[in-house]
Image (tube, rainbow, N blue to C red; front, side, top):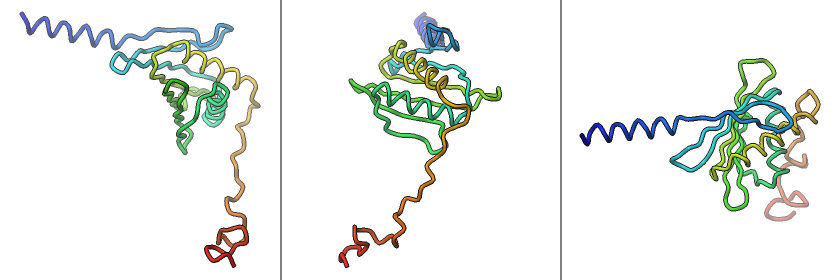
Length: 163
């Protein structure tokens, strides 16, 4: 009897953990997102497809986190992930994957505080950023890192000896 009740509780827990809900990202209209709570960490993940190629959506996600007063702590070089922190130690992770549909990107926003409205605010702000961006992705910074004066450091270029 105990074995079957434990198995039943395990199946119930797996069933609850696998639930996801469809919500509107923006009350003005826009994509429908899938929200999946993580009962083990207390977080929530919201996933939706947004219109835009990967570099453009990455730039919009970066601007969104800046505008919402999150501090970006890590960005992937291949522009597929951004991690940030907010007030009250809120952890945000945005993962980007090029969708199978051309011109679309799948965006997943994870928040450790479990608040779906915060994830909706991130998606809504990102959609507003994308609507106001030009069709082309922003140019990457191609300026050289060094000053071009030999690379010896220091204000006078003399390195540790100053001469």
